[in-house]
Image (tube, rainbow, N blue to C red):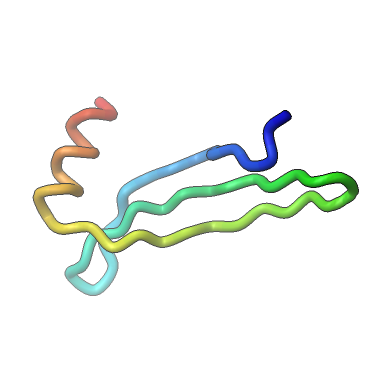
Length: 54
């Protein structure tokens, strides 16, 4: 049984900083919730993630 799963994700640049945006779906009994998480990345991490997803 999955309680959380990662849906869409992307790397974005906001005010000269890079972020990994993750859309996480939570399902537990009668509760369904969708959250978007911003994770701060270095320029090198953002570049590596972008290249890996091509």
